[in-house]
Image 1 (cartoon, one colour):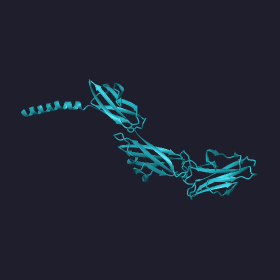
Image 2 (cartoon, rainbow, N blue to C red):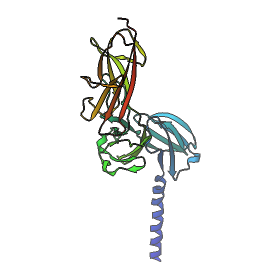
Image 3 (cartoon, rainbow, N blue to C red):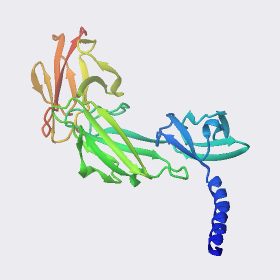
Image 4 (tube, one colour):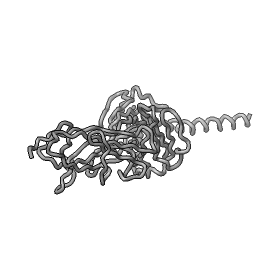
Length: 322
């Protein structure tokens, strides 16, 4: 009898001390979607609770310390993420008591840039070199993922996985390999390059589509006083009221950095015949008095690459009487 009484006393004491523990276990939990939003992207935050009836609670939502929304049973809050992320806090009040929880959401993004390596552009050209068949293209990934202190680590601290047109490139993937180099194939109309970057317990993925174009030849007059007059291209059938004319040809985007490269063939023709010049892309003309027009043709050919031959004709009309 005495032993039974002792057990009852012990059980009653357990109930008395356990009740406050379960009451104190009430808490709020915040979850955000998407997990890794980009700056400006809409984010949705939801609140849930163990042991608290949120449907009958007055819930307040704060963004960076400012009250944004308030009402009974408002368990979701949506907003546009800022460049440096946002701190979201939810406070639920019921029966005179209150619980609160906050979450820091860091914005994440990844820039994917590409450039042509080794393509030709004339001096002072400020545009982007267009890729052509068999040119070399470098794609670079720059993740913008902030750590817990809001700092963005160096791109070399992430692990990358590269794909081109659905095929994996394990040799160019791995830790710190944030660049990818390839050449458009002969039959490629466009290329899709996809990269994923993992780090700081996050993973980002982005793709870029690159469409190969064609090399272009443009003609300009060359002035002995000012050099190439790049401000105005020479068009076919253009009139010249003089007989000494200097023309420079610029073969944009061909795969070379130097027109004097031994693998590059340049050729001028005048009236269908090859015309020897001292410079690979310049021709100096002294048109005879009885000639009223001159037919030129400029051609380039990269002997080491297929499909990198280009040519363009040019007719000059001479209006000078002398």
